[in-house]
Length: 237
Image 1 (cartoon, rainbow, N blue to C red):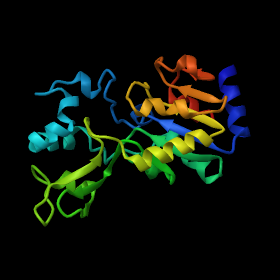
Image 2 (cartoon, rainbow, N blue to C red):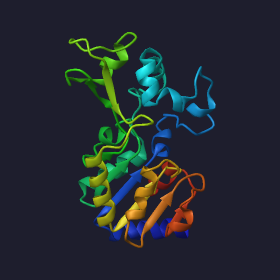
Image 3 (cartoon, one colour):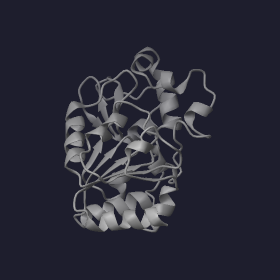
Image 4 (tube, rainbow, N blue to C red):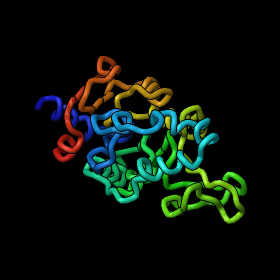
């Protein structure tokens, strides 16, 4: 395939790759995305998923929020796949500068990536809203009803809910990495969730690669587009 050969050539020439990743990177580890056929938006709940994982719903009905969160958003038993592993290897080789991800599952770090900017936070970080004490994801999983710290405060996952803003420091580091990349790989994202999707506009180079099963609003903006399985592409890289 000509597009794959071009991609291989660009990767070999690059020394400052940045990967911008979305849910499609983790679906091949078994984690469902929100918008797929089996995604959360296709399932039936008492409330729409985007309502349940909003800040106002969390404040209003924390017991229901945590029940949903434990069942649907705490992927602790999943393993990194070939895409996570290849990106981590490129970082060790000094080829990949950073991963900017919309995912909250921590699989990039589990694969060995170190320089990961998590735009939407991580299920692996949880803090008491009262005293600030750190608690593990296992603490949330094993808690009954609303997880509470020893001080009595609610332990909130460090994930960005609807109605909450992204962390400014993480955004600044992500933009700086994207701006300085000599190759930007946009992997497994529909590029419909803002403000994250708009970050690729900061790329100034001429090697923007978009790999996603389905078409995205940015296909015409990219220099190379592959509508293929990430696992299949990365197994050949």
